Amino acid sequence: MTVLTLNPLTKLTHDDFRELCQINHDIQLELTSQGELVLMPPTGWESGKRNSNINLDLGLWNRQSKLGVVFDSSTGFRLPNGAVRSPDAAWVSKHRLEALNPDAADFLALAPDFVIELRSASDRLKPLQDKMKEYQDNGVRLSWLLNPKDREVIIYRTGNEIEVLKSPTSLSGEGVLLGFVLDLNGILY
Image 1 (tube, rainbow, N blue to C red):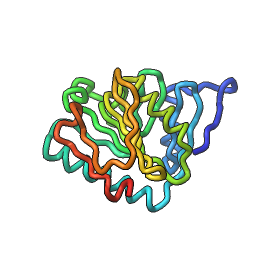
Image 2: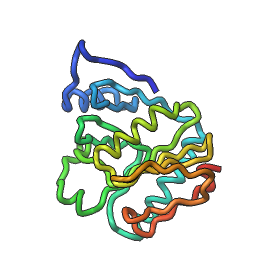
Image 3: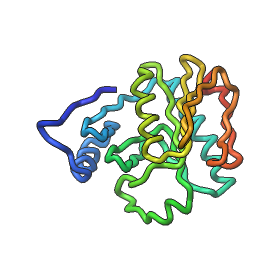
Image 4: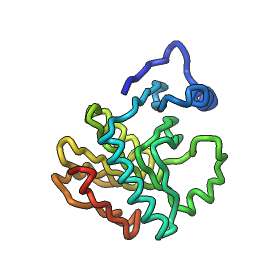
């Protein structure tokens, strides 16, 4: 991950950032609430495999439950603080998405209900933890930071302290993703 500081030279508007992403569609970009541009390099094959398993499990659960919509890492969410983030996996309840009536070509102007970030071999932990805290501060109800390197999961919940699980075998979607259980074999191990 590379972070470019644009301030005080320029401050990207929402429209500027969307256009920058469209012009450079082969580069995964995020925008922080401070106006920094984050360049996300492609992951290695192991992280790609793990992330695919996460999205498959979440998608299959959602197809059965029909409670919302699942998004992959190419989806941009414009958070209330102005940041545009692309979590590795995200879920938004159907009623929240329908109430928004979003423009299909734009970033979703909301914080997801649920987010997963998967730490790749090249990721530093602190920036990911900061990103997870940002999700929590912007209204994400439940989020999981999956850290295969240390075989741990860090759970962020609205209004609660951060919880760290060492070597869990599965995770429950609790009251946010009713009935969802993520098997961590093939993801953490």
